[in-house]
Image (cartoon, one colour):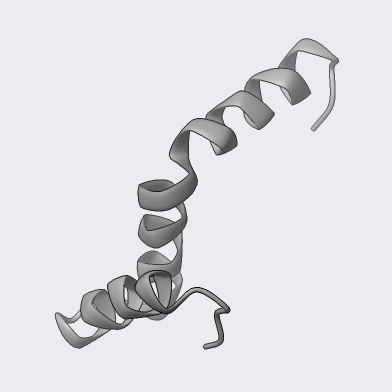
Length: 51
């Protein structure tokens, strides 16, 4: 697992150490730090008829 942002890596690593599966920890980390952007992107995809 790699990240250029130490605080993101630490957040994800703490989730993994708490027993979360790596994939789940990565998803939770991305939503924690970039949730608004992810939701906006998903809405834009939906509005344009994308995946």
